[in-house]
Image 1 (spheres, helix red, strand yellow):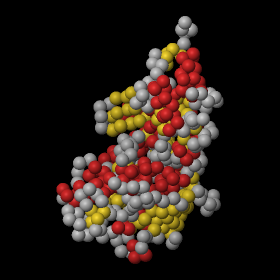
Image 2 (tube, chains in turn yellow, green, orange):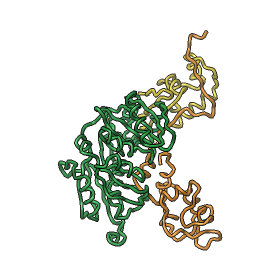
Image 3 (cartoon, chains in turn blue, orange, brown):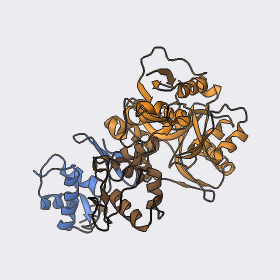
Image 4 (cartoon, one colour):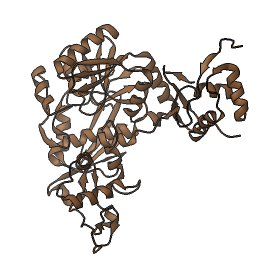
Length: 77
Length: 287
Length: 121
């Protein structure tokens, strides 16, 4: 489903029929979330297990999540 | 409507109705070598009508209507009725077509492979396409490239080619035998003249091609070329597509496939001979 | 400790990592039509235009009378680049341009104005 375009990844979001182009760390966040609901700290931990995070800042992660929520790619459980 | 005609351009049929005879006569004349549509079931209807009954006679002005219309459209004088008809067909395609992904681009074909040129109005897509037909390329269209979401092939939609201002003489020099429509001076886009696609383009109208090179031309700069990233190409093509959003997932798939399978360059050119030479070289090396 | 994990940056709080594709409808209007913008919209014809672009009754101080005809998209585009709308002076040009800039979806002329601002136009 996601299409790799080099610098960015193109996503078609079926429920809203909208297309978004997303850059790192969005694909990694979406992948780590998978189907589960997590809170910000759990997600941060999951990302740290998978990746070497230089800037493991919960506020930065919260900002990314807020943006994803505003375009409808994730939902607050 | 008093006067009417039917046109089939590639896979799309149009019924055009008019309150005046002249635009219909112009269409029938310029499209006379195109095959007649099989039936009068048209995909789209275009209506050229007078806003008030007396506008048919007094300073006659043509309102563009049809299955799809947009607000705020201004009428054109009757002398530009042919332009109104062409704009009307563009409008129906832009707002209503959903069978193919539409990209605002010119397309020419060679050996079953297509060169697409897209970009801003005035960048030269129509002019370059017309000039390439003088060098052995088959014209597929100068306004819309039709991309099949299922096959990825580009389908021809060869309407009259719109040449503006300086391009009119330039193309006439390269194609002295080309049939042209009336000279329309002082249209909203300047002086405009339509060039009829040649016999080869008409004969091959129903033959699709594989997209093989995508160019973003820009006129008025020193000769240059640069590669364009796939993400940038994707975004620019969504801006050049009138129905990407309407098509939903199949539009997304068609565009992704196009972007990932075709080499892309942005080219700057100061004059058309320079552009043509650059196009030839890029086609040789990339397509 | 690092088992060869790939580096990842979460990015700054103010940065954006999503580009959403919007419909190119306004671009459609521009490429297929010469459109016009009436000042003010026909529903409020006969009113005057204040310098801030609001539509006001006839005798409002410092308001300018409406132009005799709608402006075309091309005329507005040229005025947006630093020219003047035809037939205007400094004050009437300013009043009409402010009116146009304030156009909302649903008001006559909005689609035309929006299409003038699309990059491919």
